[in-house]
Length: 115
Image (cartoon, rainbow, N blue to C red; front, side):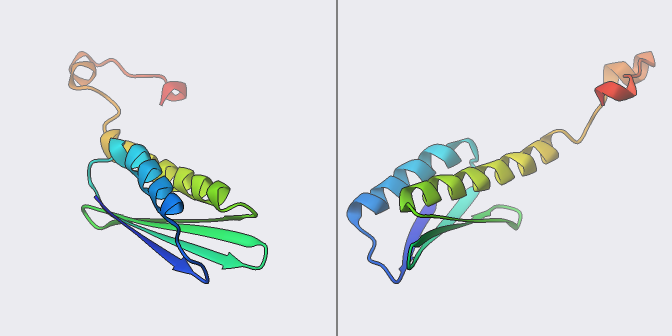
């Protein structure tokens, strides 16, 4: 997984860069198909904006943007948004079959409330 960090109107410190790398490696470790993560950090007066653009295999692209007064809080919130979106996409692909073959052969149907 390749992680690139870009700063707009600010210099990226080593501490900020290592924080982003550590958090991204940890959060995206459960998604092995993630190929590229681009982090864009912006400073505008009192607003600190963090934007994550994640590209994965099969043309999957996820974007999240978050702003607050603290850059670390913005990074954490944007990272949480991207991991939530990736988790939702992964679950959608994995959970595309609702009934097992044994249930279909036996004629057992689930109530609508459990679907």
